[in-house]
Image (tube, rainbow, N blue to C red; front, side, top):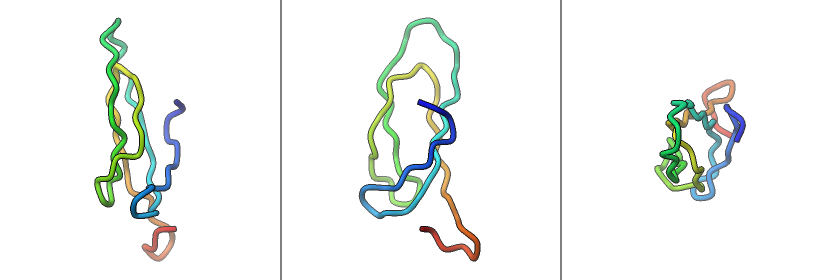
Length: 65
């Protein structure tokens, strides 16, 4: 997965970015959930040894698409 991918939540429809910080640990990969920062709904998962962070995407005027 590329960093800073824009997702659209399957539950609330709002946009958010997903970033995976690679900890570069050998082995130890686990499935991590991708949760919407707006409503908390799970929007898939990734197998990684890094940390998944999400951030709300605001458009001009504070309205999300």
